Image (tube, rainbow, N blue to C red):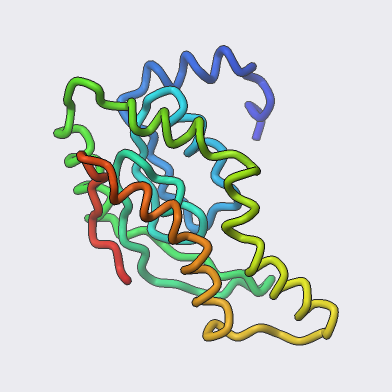
Length: 171
């Protein structure tokens, strides 16, 4: 936390450009800005297959999430699978090719609020309605909406010739 805010955009760009890969296998991610920033610089990412991370991974690897738990604050978190992290790093590093990073860069540049809002609008409206009604949503209610929201990004990734490496992703 001592380094938070210490680097300007130009310095962060140099850091990402000097990196072979961004390892971002967190237990839970909010929006995932560093994942998009790295890819905007052409750096592939290795992420956990949980929360916003899989939908943000255009080039790199998605590592299986295991050992989920509910925190005292009522938020789900997961531990990424250690062997999956190793395999994800190995496969991402082995996939060096001309043009590496171009797909990640194009994906990150196209990922903006105008793209994100329509994808998630139905889910956000469902959550807003439940909050107004003081009603708790069940996973069975949320999952179909979340899957529908992620479908456009998934379809875009699947249309690329050189798809991302998926390491032990659980469906």
